[in-house]
Length: 79
Image (cartoon, rainbow, N blue to C red; front, side, top):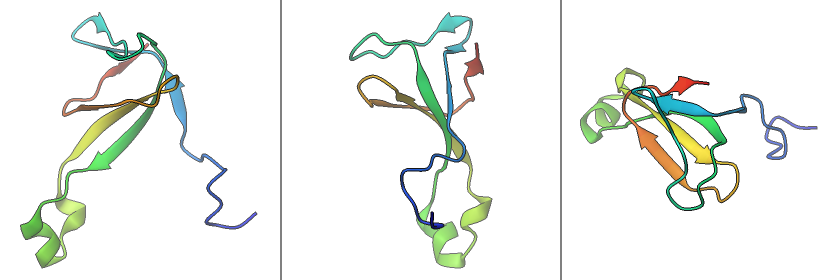
């Protein structure tokens, strides 16, 4: 198995989540289990200067049923 093997999920965290005491459900299929990831919010200026690492990040929830992606600026709470 190589470094670039796409079948291996290293940091896969599947769970239910809430935001402001409200359970998050997929608006497309109604499923409540999501895969969690942190994504960098790149800006052209910081990329030009080579400071991509200094950009802020967003929380992304990917529905495990229909694969819809939901973005959150604040981190949702794991249930």
